[in-house]
Length: 389
Image (tube, rainbow, N blue to C red; front, side, top):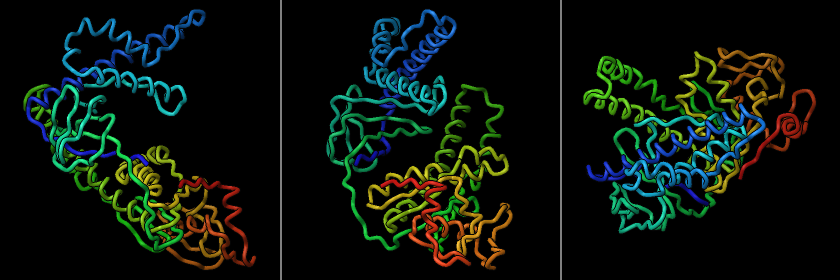
């Protein structure tokens, strides 16, 4: 399977300037292509009788070479791959928009999400050097895998530059300590397992929120574009990067532990965008990184030979008693202990939900008053189970 490898570059001032030029050309090509495609869509909407064919990435690149490059000689100072990949990514963004997977592409702004892609003659020289077209030999802080990448992506976060490319990794089947585990995600604790283990979230934003607010408050009166303003912007970007890195580190450790030591991992298909609509909990939910948790589990279960099962979001894991299967009509967020009125069973609500998730793929479950019933088939029929290997 293919995995991404990403590491920081060790650059001098001349190399940083070259990377900034490549980012600028890629951003200019994206914005030019976006303006042109929006103009074509507007014309087709205003004139239904004379529609213009929506251009492909190849069409956009041909027009760019014929119309834009002659008027902007600084295009020739960078690799041709930078604007070419930018237009490919633009067309991919439009395809996702047409399929209603994502929204309309937006114009890019200087200094935000700067990145570009390169292909061609790429060689890894030694352990910490990589040869790139038009950029020459670049150094890294850590050892590089000895592979032959076909293309690389160079991006900037704050004042640091990173290079990433894909590498081939063989999946390994690790020894599993637990066959099936249910994982309930929450705001108070990041994850509660059906085995009783509880993993606390990093809550990095909450810990660094006061420091971030202070830096932003000190920057309020600085003149935009000045040297002091740029220094403050770098400080703010570094803090945001620190918050994201702490969160990702916590998620990587948890997902690796789950994929390595559990045969089947059961999670809920959470409606994260809907949960973020709650203004009282939005910051705490975003600070946990539920989407990133699922994304990491999807490829790590494949890497370590385990299975990921995703239960439908309408499955009442929190309202159902894990002891007898009785479902409550309502359960408020303030009730942290689940109390069953039918069998007098008491349990932490997150642990109860995790146990129900683990039983969603089990063969049978003991139902109070009805003997042994095949409860899992009912769950799969009504709420759906999506398995990912």
